[in-house]
Length: 105
Image 1 (cartoon, one colour):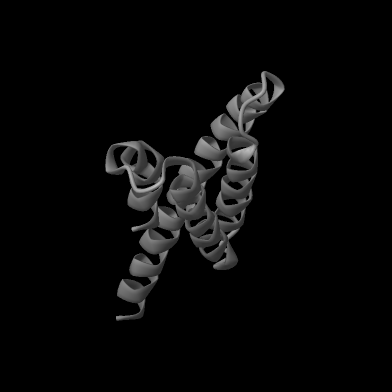
Image 2 (cartoon, rainbow, N blue to C red):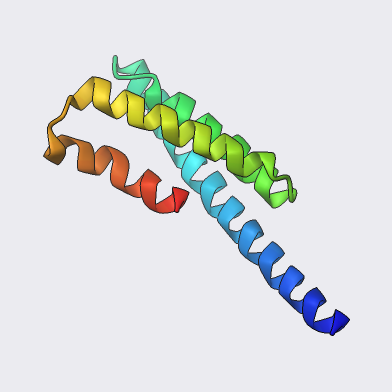
């Protein structure tokens, strides 16, 4: 019985670690690409969101629950940014919100 609980805990921690690694990788790509976009006059959103995802992923890899809450905060701010940038145009909101929503689920 105790061994079964240990196996479930190990598999949960592996899933959290893998999700954290995915978030950190996406964050790194967003931060680097966003920095380039900012240099050429684009939005700072991608740099900030990338850094948020990078921090969130790092915290999740370390087993800290605050990493998940940080991701949800970045997601909430992404929704606000998407609505500010695209308004209520559903076709413009889908690429800005679909990926982050899938990761939030």
